[in-house]
Amino acid sequence: MYIALSIMLVAAMFVLFMCGYYTAVIKAKYGKNWLQAVPITVALLMFNIIWALVELSKTARWQ
Image 1 (cartoon, helix red, strand yellow):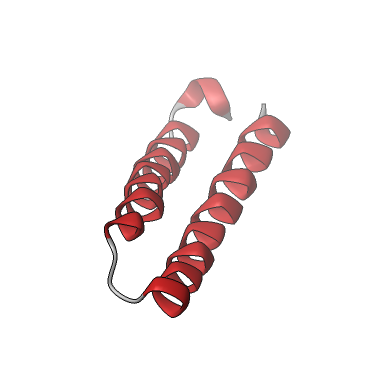
Image 2: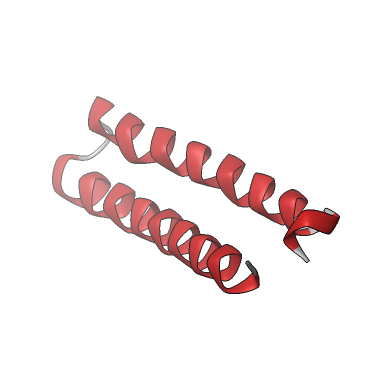
């Protein structure tokens, strides 16, 4: 289970990084635009998923 948890955590962190990248790309191309809300929303969800995975790793079932 440690490998599965690690893979999910790395994937969530990669998506979080890409959300920051696409936010910068949208800002550079279009300036302040409502399109920035999409990667920011996904980044917030990824942050919550990372937090949940870290809390799951502390339980005995995932050890």
